[in-house]
Length: 133
Image 1 (cartoon, helix red, strand yellow):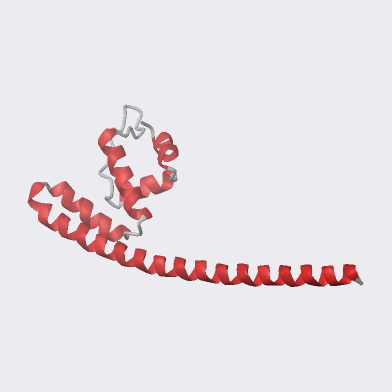
Image 2 (cartoon, one colour; image 1 turned 120 degrees about the vertical axis):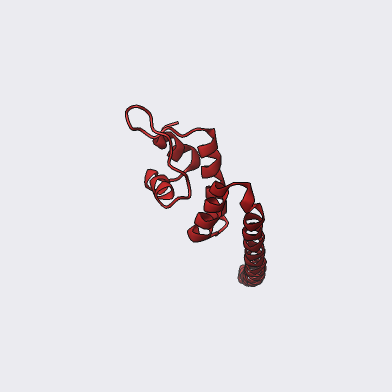
């Protein structure tokens, strides 16, 4: 699959894909006879993984370290697992903070909705009084 197709499929720029390859997040992608990148299924799975991890807020540096360990093979399984556990804990903590923020936003919205309902009720009462007079 050509880089433009990968870019479209994953919703990321061609420049980002090239950057990921340049910094080692993706091993050098095979190129066809014309020198055009030709992503295979393994490359696509790596891009998908990186996109998911970046979307969760994992730093590029952590992913570079992780992918470097992947390239070294099975002898690094324990180290890779430790990186993933640490990142999972950080994501869980961020999610907890985000839930607190969401709860606060919901509370504030509810306060404003109640205030608006109160104002509407007052306006209806005034209109009724003015209509009677």
